[in-house]
Image (tube, rainbow, N blue to C red; front, side):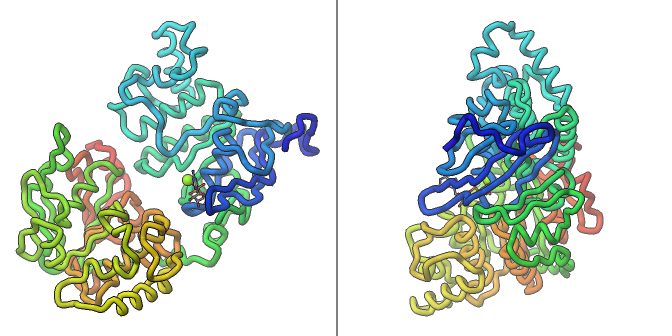
Length: 508
Ligand SMILES: Nc1ncnc2c1ncn2[C@@H]1O[C@H](COP(=O)(O)OP(=O)(O)O)[C@@H](O)[C@H]1O
Ligand SMILES: [Mg+2]
């Protein structure tokens, strides 16, 4: 497709350092990028904004050489380039920092930085590499110890290592794929300091996100994507959150109707006493004491991987604790069946498998968890399935579609609908793990409204979420989970973002 003699008319001073035109990239059954144009200028932060599945990661992968587009051209400094691999990309000064890090756990920071590039390691003594790594890190405000081993580092520190690695190798275009997804608010702020240091040094940054607030804060320009096409491009000076949301979602979104009224809590309905979960050497949960009262939402904040999954599974009777007890309205919970019988609705982190049976149809999945006394026919289940498909705009061929074929977001809608809007019997306790993760904005509103309904109908709701804004908007009380322990407990009124963020990072 490319012609090495072609120079784009807009090349020359002030021209984009990196651009792509007419990019088409298909995966089986989906056009991930459909005739996309984008360009990046020297020293700018250019954000790709869009919901899950919009095509952001695919576009970044094309720009760094990880994917080759079927149609379209990538330009570096105005000249077409053919990037056949990330190594090619790097040779052109382009590097991507992936959402899921690719570091070797038992190696040190420095070892990871030079790994896979014999040129970098061969001529230098270990100490000299450490010094260079430290100096690159310091220049860009990335505090890391070159001699630390990766397995001892937090998520935020690992990300710094990935960025240092890119900078050390001479990248001047950095593609950051959803870099704030797993960061605490303080780590996000620190990352922004680094991003500004990089652009001040003349580097250019492609920043990928779906969080409107931070996008407006960090970007010079924003390209909004939806369903593989660019729906708009906005300079920061003109950026308006409502307009960005509209471009991202495709219709008007009420961004301000997000704060929910507090509940009026009754007596405790869900109690965990001294719950400990050990898995071999690891302690996933360490003597957790927790109470959720009827008519309140308790929000569990924290960076994922700090015991959230185990906590949810224990409370829903899916996982037996090593020690400690769980009670729902005075009944001990020792199995998923017992939890169901006691009126516990469960939205697990793992949608397919723990949540839905992949090989069964949507209708059959609705029947699976019917509580006793709620005998319903197959045809009624199909009717319910049709209703859920319409109400939640589930993209599915019909009620007889097997759940395995649903995308993550659509499976999630079916699951939440079954658990919260299910069989007419209101749940007494709701345990919801990341219930809005991976959903589009419209579905997020619906799910939050269902959780709020459950609270108002007197259910005790435990909302586990990495999205601190969500927790702050919904919860009556907030606990922070850090390394299997509750590191902070606060009322809605006294909840302080800074303190919560520090607790999320384990800083007392
Ligand atoms: N390796 C792949 N194989 C098949 N489909 C993919 C692959 N990567 C992405 N897709 C699909 O391409 C579309 C765009 O995905 P992606 O670029 O990851 O979106 P985003 O990063 O905006 O969430 C989605 O429909 C996704 O399911
Ligand atoms: Mg992505």
